[in-house]
Image 1: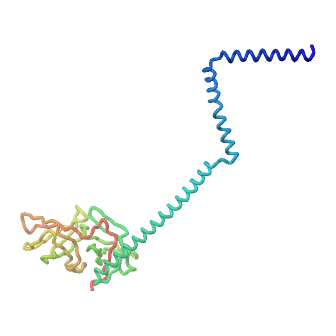
Image 2: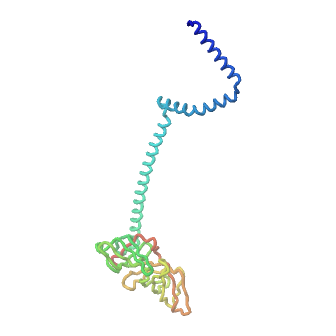
Image 3: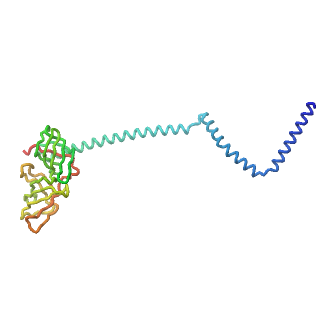
Length: 273
């Protein structure tokens, strides 16, 4: 068989194959073809998308990642600035607190300028059922001695009961072991004032003269009797008068001028001259 015959046979075979394919395609349901195309598309699309991403990455189309990096850098910078602002605010609060303390000292010294005093602040509190003391940050090296009077802006705090080189313990007037001789400002009658177990804000006033016209709201101050507290330091105000069957036994409650739960700044009177 020569070459021309071979080519003829191949041509015939190819023609028959093409005709068969045309018949198959002509008789195939279009919907089935679409279904097959959808399956092929579903399988091919992820691959195509991945290739597209790689193509874009290779070509330098990575602006999204550049934006993410920029946002991260900006966020880090904002965090740094926020931290710096917080530190500045803390420093401002410290300075403000120091200024407020200095103002309290100045106001105290102006109010009690007739006395030689030394400023101090409370560094510890011992509040129990039967005792109410505070520790202040001045002591023997500052000239502090036992029985010296301690005052605050609002009035009487108590007196020094012990000292160390650099600290002093103060027994407050709300301590149940403390007794202060006071005077009712309106009548000038003398009374005895003591701490109670019920409250660190309320004192009991006893030994009220039978002829004393004591009234709610009357101011009470130190009498100067007793050798510890100088005269005229504000203690508090009469809150309630409790009458009994025997007028000799009547008593009153006194609300302290000083809020001992918030006590922070005090003055120690070094002398009463």
